Image (cartoon, rainbow, N blue to C red; front, side):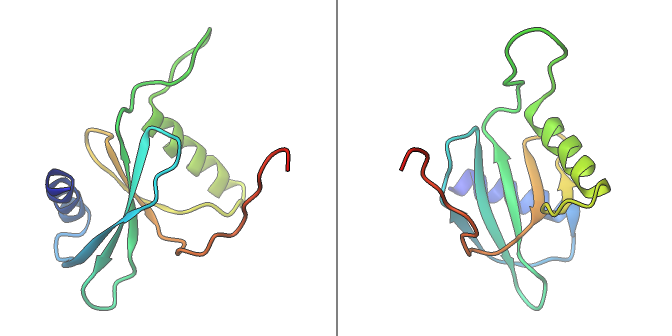
Length: 117
């Protein structure tokens, strides 16, 4: 995680130069091309979630325009927020599109279902 930690420290410094990171926690992975980390700051600042794209190349298959994964997430987030749907707020997008810093909604699992059970 050393390389990831350095990358997250650099991205966080671009977003909030005065923020001091207390710790970076790995959030359980899902079945996607993304990895998630909770960045906890020293002091009273709220934690944020770093969404790290292993690849931000388009995942779409077939006809039509392709959109990079990070751009698709950003556009969908904007659309949902503009229409009043509750989604994590997007705080920062790294220049290379590999990292998004988003609102931390906490660690409570709000919904879980198993298809076919």
